[in-house]
Structure formats: C-alpha cells, structure tokens
Image 1 (cartoon, rainbow, N blue to C red):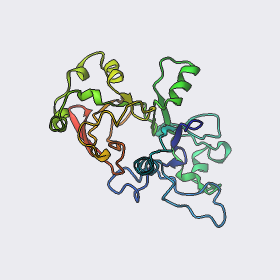
Image 2 (image 1 turned 135 degrees about the vertical axis):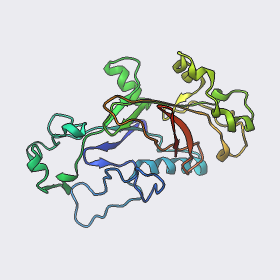
Image 3 (image 1 turned 120 degrees about the vertical axis):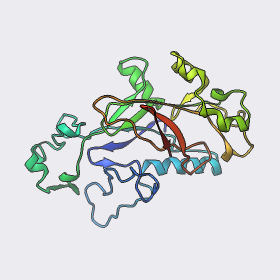
Image 4 (image 1 turned 45 degrees about the vertical axis):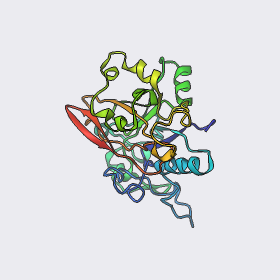
Length: 271
C-alpha cells in the first residue's frame, strides 16, 4: 500500500468494483462489468473471485480479523485509459478512446475486437475526485497518498465520507442505535467539515483511530457501532445521487445497511 495506495475501479473498458455474483443484493452490480482478460491470452480463463475491488476490501477485513494485518486498505480512483489524448467522460459526448479504431460512430458500431475488447462495449470514462488543500501538484498527490479520493462513473459529484467515535462521544450502546435518527447539531453547523475532521478521519484515509481503546459496545470486534458521516453533492448535469455500498466496520466481511439522506427530502438505504 505504500507504493500503490489507490486502485482504479472504472475506466472506458468497464468497472472492476464488483460483480453480481459477488454482490447479489446490489442492484447496480451489473453496471458495465469488465469481465475479460486484456489481450484475450490463449489458455487463460477470467475468474470472478479475486478480480474485483469490493471483494478485496472484504478479504482485507477478514485478514485483519484473523491474522492482524490488512494488505488491501486501498483508496479508489477512476480514469479513462484513453489512447486519443482526450477523456470522453460524458455519455452524450462520447467520441471513443482508441483513436483511428473507434473515432467515428461507424467504427464504434463495427464490432471490431482489439486485445479481446469489442469496441461496442466501451463506454465513457470515470473520474477521480481528490480532496486536496489546494489545486497544486504537491497537494493533490499528498491527498492521493493518504487516500482522500473517490471514484465516479463520470458525473461531477462531490462525496465526503468520515468515520469517528467522537461523533457520538458519551453515548451508551443503546443510545448509539438511535443516534442518527436525529441530525446532530454539528452536522447543521457551517463549520461541519472542521468538526468532521476533529472527531474522526476520512474513510479510506490512513486509519488513525485506536479501535482497541475506543470500543463502546462490546469486546467483540464484530460489534463495533462506528458512527459514519456521509455528505454528497450532485450537479444539474448529473442524474442525482444514488446509494453506494458501505463496509460497516473493521472485522466485518458483510455489507451493512444504513439509511442516509440523499437530497430533495429523500433517503436511501446504503448497503
């Protein structure tokens, strides 16, 4: 993780976040799946297990729980892998990614296969969001190193995701179960971002929380009730925010389900 803190989960070839066989309860798991081996090498068979990032996160939690280490604490990124020096990240302005091989509509619909890829199955690029202090190369790369990033399939959305025991400081186990039925005052405050950093850490950033010292519910690592804070903003061009998967706590390899507000007075179950 020192040399490769991020993993790409979306590009023009498809997404490698998850697969319906691995996430059967996720209605979006079949979105633009990348399921072939690049180059279509003879004698090689693509495998579902071991090929998708969400499963790697679960495997890392299992390794942490059993062996005390997690080699899969990576953040997410998305890009284009374009070979035409441009990034076609919008569906309504998609112009191909392979230059002369798919630069026109006729070429993209021709059924040409390159390195095992049918050009008709390629789609718009993904984008990586980076939470950096300023728009400089050093600041952006520092943010990537500490994994304060998120990946999107193209729309310009803004997502922040924090976890912190101090968000519910002083609450009992029973009170924690009801904690998020009412919005805490600090979330409503204009300085909520400072409070989010003061009370927790960005999820996927290097974990600075001492889980052993701050267990509030049980001595069992599987029964943590870690308060999470999720903030999302969409743009008029985007279709709106949709639920995304959440791995609920260290030591758990199953998806939890959380109800969060997604704007417009609507809520959604995050699973």
